[in-house]
Amino acid sequence: MKFNDCILRPARISWINLVVFKMSTWCVLFIVVLACLTSCKKDPVKAPASAVPVPEAAIVPAPQDTIPDHAFLKVRLIKDSTNYDETMICFRHAATTAYNAGDDAIYLSGFGQEHFASVSSDNVDMAISNVPYTPGMSIRLDVHAKSSGVYELQLDYRKNIPYGIQVWLKDAYRKDSLELSHYNFYFDLYKADTASFGRGRFSLIIRPGA
Image 1 (tube, one colour):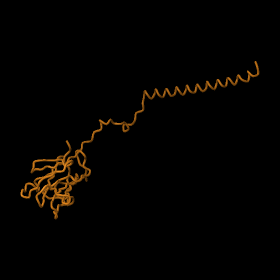
Image 2: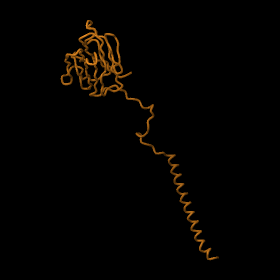
Image 3: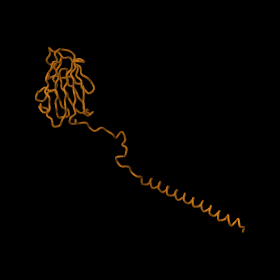
Image 4: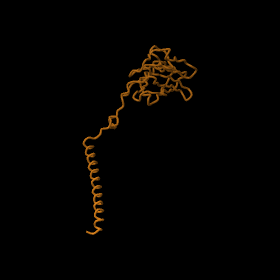
């Protein structure tokens, strides 16, 4: 044996050992990763119920059969752009349909061309009325004007009224009705015909949508 062979052989052995060691390490890592993947397939980690996405078809709106406290709407009677009057209806579970001096505001007619108020269950004209909501409830309206002509009724404003609640205007004179949530109502008022104005013609019907 030559001296060079004695020097190189340990070096060759060390190099071979290093390669074997590295290959062993990679094999162990591969086996660990494979075992983890197999375990995940067999027993996946479930997300919390709140994190599970709900299919769009399963999302349906809650039935809107009530109106929260302090929600309100305003209805306006219009002759033209400068002549109009309005009444406000507020909703509160503890309120009554009769006039209550602590909650409601009595209507006081001014010098305008038209006069418009809601009517309480005890026949008081109201500028602001607090009422409890019941599905299908009816609220009478008192309409007056100084002259005959074409007038307009519109749902001027609504706040916190659930989208499923519809506001209908019932016209007893024409035996007609219209959903004020989407359309304005035009009508003729005749001073010579007392049935065409006053408390007996119009009422609001507030109800859940079909």
